[in-house]
Length: 620
Picture (tube, one colour):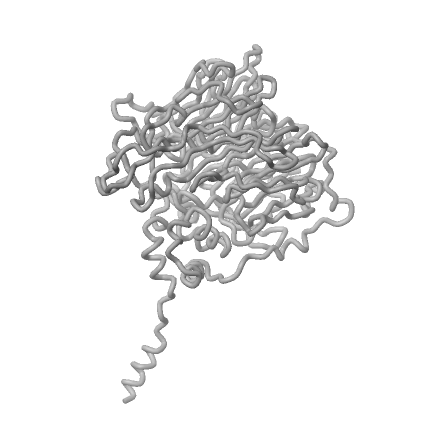
């Protein structure tokens, strides 16, 4: 009897499986346990996310198709299993950081040094020593000044707009934009917070401009394709407008604010859904809209292609639709003198591969009509999960494709050379740098730096200064079928390219660092260590982050390393929230008032998540 009792007690103490465990294994594990291959957040990243971010993804966001079969109860069980949370995240930390006295008022008297993705109207991503309050010499002797941590955040993907000593920082998973005063370099404070209606996550960086009626505004967009325009002085919304048209429409590129219009690029994520036979493929495409800055009403819309029509029976009596694709991931380059808007597009999702896929395009600012288009890569039909030789059971996948996924993710630059000539510069995920005539779209030169990969190649951005293009490369890639071998001297890292000729002036090689604790903290550190995020040039120095969380300062003239810092660590923060550093990706590096600001953490594609906004200052 004693033995039976002991056995019964042991049985009673055995914990029952969490009800969300089986849901994760059957509904989620195939993708999130293989994040690099499926381009999904890793399970460890999901565990660090907020309840509301996951709930939004499963109900309205990218996972709404997968989440459709879940009830409110089972969805809550799944999220609780992953995060341990059952409630939304709060911004309780902000109370102690609110600005007091004169600092509480937003001071917009200073110039806007970062007004759009590329900082200035030409999108050069270059700051002067006066704008940054930093010289090349000071950038070579930095130290951490302070860190801010954001609760339940895994991805610091958005770049702040900078006006004087005011930073306007969107934090995507927090569904909020924070106005920060950095006039005291040792002690930042929060002036106001804008929270999205309904808690929809944000996605783009912030753009700044003064519209025709004199109001200073910020424009940014969300995961739900809603454009938000707020008064920069108060954080109060002027208006919000959902610009999504298709089932998977998405905003990623930073809007551009002009006096009489706001230009918004729209992408789409059908690429992540189409391999599912339950999805009717493929019907979405990218487009650009021009909105009235005072009201949000649409002025015109440019579509990269006509709406999809049935192409053929996919094998089960349902149609394969096309053309589709050409998402616009980058931020528009606006040349008001020429009256043109320039941007790049992404892959096709179904045949026929339209001429505006993987293309550089110019449209007219006044009405959105197309001026010219140059297709860089033909027949790039790509859907995640298909592969170049898909099995016949994958009904939406096709074989008549080069299957490369070589978008133009980097925003374009209007470069003015020392001789007076102007060029449109572009970086492609194929590893190719392009220089085009802005009036005709004719190719002036191209420089191939390997063959790239779906996540770069050249991914988020390039920079230009003094007749030089600064080109970060995440991966060199593999030889293409029938193509030439890749020069073994090419390595992931930073390339300085002559903007007159396309010749490589110098190259800084990124190398993996998997020693000790770094090997545990940096996922797949032997592969994910290249330069993917957009660079920033300050006074002849190039500032660049790496996929494994390191921050570098390089001499812009020689490529010599001047300074580095490892952000892949925990941080004690000024706001009391535990700070965690991770991959440095997307767009994040800006400067003001003698401080260099960097986002650390990017929990996508199997990279290291993090939640930290870091400020660096010169050592005495």
